[in-house]
Image (cartoon, rainbow, N blue to C red):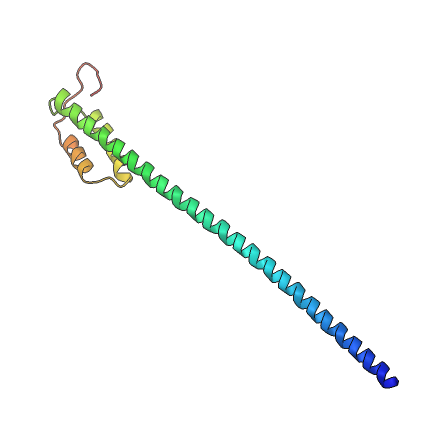
Length: 135
């Protein structure tokens, strides 16, 4: 009878110990699942942020390209004004304004054609403004 009591007590203690271990393992599994879910959420948010940043960079590139094109058009317009309206002559103010447009154009990565246009304007003969009208 004492053996039965000892066996029952030992069995109960073993069951309690195994139950406590199982409960601890279950709690750890639950925490790990929660951490995995949090990590997946964080990773998805990070990917969304990166996608937004890439779209922002693409938009910025498009804006830069559009601005570079407009500045090139302005240089071409200034060259056309110099050639047709001023017979190929430009005063210092006109050259300064063209250089400012070119500097902005070049700062955005523009080269080539715009550089040649600006060189043409800068190399034009210099004449003072007549009648105080802007060139």
